[in-house]
Image (cartoon, rainbow, N blue to C red):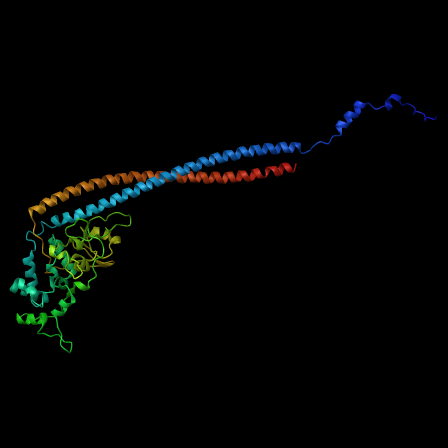
Length: 430
């Protein structure tokens, strides 16, 4: 058989391939994953991100817990302040009522050694000879108790100046000046029937001079001159609020005026309507509806007129004066924004002053003791309020600082998270 010749220079043994060499070659031809290094890098990044997220969560949770704790403390301090202020307001109310009672017995005691009494007031009224009040007063003096049974006068309660008493002559002068002599001399009737009995008219609408007060005045030689005021209790709108608890005089329980900062105005003594003393017969069932004179007559005359020690204190309290004010040194605010200036007018008809007694003096001593005790309690409350306010301010400052740190941390964490999200994209591009 023909065999092709072996090429010159080639060793025959070199034509036989070594099996080991073939296997090595086979191993070298196995495909290699070029992304293997990238996967390891990604896993490393993810592990790092997980640790960072856990760290952020723990720190965020701590900040939130701190904020929650500070918020709870703020709420506690605010509640403490609320209760302390409520207690302070109650003490202010007590101080006001005690001062009202105390001032009645002390204000102006040395100013007038001969206080106005009922007899003096009657003399003052009689000086107005031709007034309706003067004629009624003359009728009462002449006929005594029988005068109240006459058809003309059976519905008449009295004259304004005789229906209330004021503890202090200075206050009495102030109230008289505020009301004016015409009002002080006004006749008060229970119903409109009593008003009609005082003045009658003929068919042409002219006053019948022979009837009513006009006829009575003519019969005693005191012809009625000019107009006169008559107040009908039946048509007055009565006070509809509460009364001071356990107060024998049934004082009206007004809200105490307070300045914009919540404080009681300095020098405030009380409301004029509650400084009028009434006889027990005039406290209840004077009107057909069962009301007394304080919540009808005097409430309509004085409304919520406030009384202060001095004009300066009254002016400082203007933000909380809505229906007028008086001061013991002669200051007068007629209504909101309306001031009465100039020299004081000495009205010659004033309210009488109730008689003092040893029992009242002892009562005054007890009031002073209670007032001193209540003021001491208020001082302690004010100290607690000051301390609690400092604690609240400090806690709020810490809360706001911690909140700022928390918001700054959230912003930084958000920025770090954004940067971390771009890391896989950088590895994918390699």
